[in-house]
Image (cartoon, rainbow, N blue to C red; front, side, top):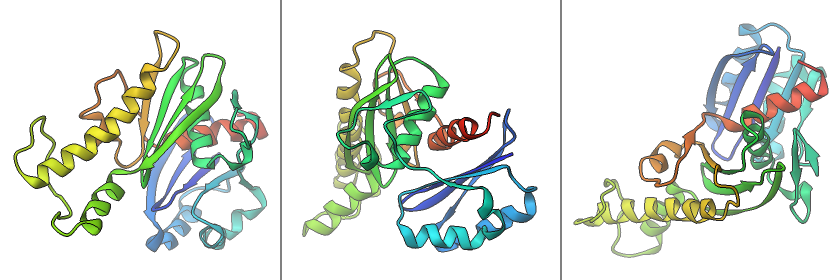
Length: 241
């Protein structure tokens, strides 16, 4: 059994895999991190516990504290030059965010086709895999929530918008929400047009994936917790599943 933990800026996503299928997945907010301890009672001793953490050393320490009985089988995943069928062409491979790295490996595990891999969370990352499985580069833009907050905090007359997307907004709240979603979708669509293969795909994951999916005008698929798929693949490289 494999336990996978993706510790992001806002939440910790977790999954339990038996080597064939996901048995369960869930998420806890950082403020409720103590809830992770429930995993100890719900599942037997795992063979591997895979942790991808971008939330800093303090959060990583709290995760270990809650799951202390599992520490002998903990693996802290780091970005590398090659793993899980993906080559990392970042100038400094170890500096690629490990959540992005795991999402890329997860995407490659699901299909060998070239892909634009989007993680839509606190930030939106838009990364490209080529046919050979090389990560050739990617963009980072503020996520939907950050964009909305920046307009509310950085201007005197604009609210924190709670509007709806429309092609021709006719009120301020709708104009802000529509503009933010158009900006997210536009960046993804530009990346998609750069794929060299005609049968490329776009994978969306993260908390805002469904909102972007609703306006995106390229073929795409929403995949829940894509980094967990990458962690599972890496776990099977440590000990064959």
